[in-house]
Length: 496
Image 1 (cartoon, one colour):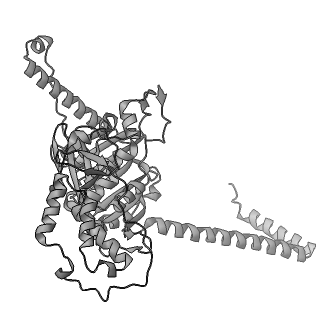
Image 2 (cartoon, rainbow, N blue to C red):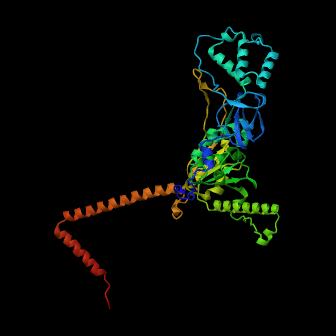
């Protein structure tokens, strides 16, 4: 057995994992497509489709054709495949990206861009498409015929030719690329297809959240996730199954839909624990599970026994999660909730360890301002800041590198802070609305100056007296001393 190193105070105990290599470890290191797995299909048009690869089924890609799922199982991710016949057979293809073009002085000013430049009629083009769908013609042959029938093609610049060929490839090619669902690919997929599902959280914003929260293996994280599991999936992927994640959700049952697309191993899934928001109140009574006696269990039917064991397992998991939450000692708090951030922070910060990060996400900056104002006034937080990240994609091609013309308007805002533990025994450190700390420091400085001034005056007075005594004659000093002694004798009361 191997034991992972211990972490800082407040972290969970080291996770013990077997040294022997498991099937999940092999599949994570050398990923291949498996049956009943979710796969992202990148099509020639640039669209992305999510499929569940069930065995002995047909996968339709619309106008690009249909293929058998069995032909894709056990194939590696990332390779491009071509559908070459009507039976749904596929084969790997070489890289079909744009080739390097040479710069020329040609331009497009003499090109007549209208329907007359294409000699093929609409019926002939449709016939070529049908031949391609039947597998009688390759997509390269179709594209070459269209190029040959274009009367103005030779007048185009090399860049225009490359763009024209690329457009035709996107239209006629039956090539697709299966991509493994990862945090990056899924964040991009949902941000493009359904941004409301993930609260318009862009992939660069998500990476900032994971970085600011200091998510790492063997940590204990507290997550409030209303992005249907995107944030919890990001934390789970970063931790890799080592540590504990407590996810707080609205409603009785969690809705972490994104997690099922990640194809997580059993070890990672077991590290995620969920608890409803209504159950985080310590005064809320715990649901009790009444176990049956051995005689009652023996008398159950097979269906009743399965239901009893399932309820028993669910009750044990709820009790474990509740204990894990109330034990506290979390290493980080991530919030992406529909509720007011200030109320959520006040309810959950007591369970966070000291010197740990708090990260709050919202698509609107105004939602975070009130929470930031509260945290800046409190003595429990440091480095309170609201940030916004910017992402701009570039097209990188030889001689054609430039930023893309369209991009997203924004990816949300992040409020981050560090929780600190103030000294509970020093009452002078307690915060007050009159800014008592600053006044105390100012008064301490003033008192110190007064003490130094008094000490200097005392020393100066002593020196002056000694100097005066040295200057006076001995007879005068003796006379003054005798006078003082006579005065003291006169003041002593006489006895009867």
